[in-house]
Length: 324
View (cartoon, rainbow, N blue to C red):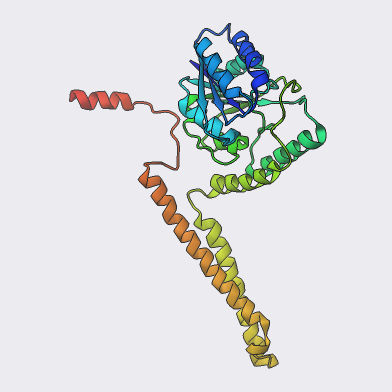
């Protein structure tokens, strides 16, 4: 089965046409499909229209949030309720073209785990949309090392086992490709058709830039130090304690050789401050290590993922039958 996830927030004018285009795009697929629309607290009647459409279209399922939680939450809820072995996400504003979905699925079946759309010819305003997006994509690629060019494109195709490894919070939908690479997914990009918005109002603005920067810091930390936070906090603490030692040595030099006493030397106060803050960073690192261990052990998580298991079925059969 194919599961299509649609985050919906005040997109009533686009929903009927979008579902018609999805039906046309998937008509040639030799497999069943479902569409999961996640209404993110819409106030324009989108929820009521989805409820009506769900009674007419057996493939349509609807999740309704009590209030607006954001696109990331909508994707995560859709992931948790998807039944298909192949999962597709796309926006509900008609700028993503459903006709690209069969070709992206074909690309996935070439041996990839995740195919990300690339809007090379993006139909959005340059100053408010294109320029901030290009800067954000460049910055994310530089910091995380991802090879994906268009991290903000919602049109993506996944294998089910990949989405089961993803846990999304905040505004993390922009970093799905980075998170997927972090669990070892084989990723491909596919150039998709992007269309101008014909109805409704864009939900994006420049205020999201700051949120992206904060989430980028989180992703950078989780990507490199999720299982070893002491490396970050311990390094900072060690540097501060080292600086404190150097300043203290210099203060002693000034006292015994230059007759500059402590009560007239601000460097001694700075040295004490560095030492105290350095010890605090070390303590935070140790506490973070304890929290990481509690997190993994209490929920039986592992800091690694296994792509395949070979031969274990034969071993289980041999043990069950008493054969060596």
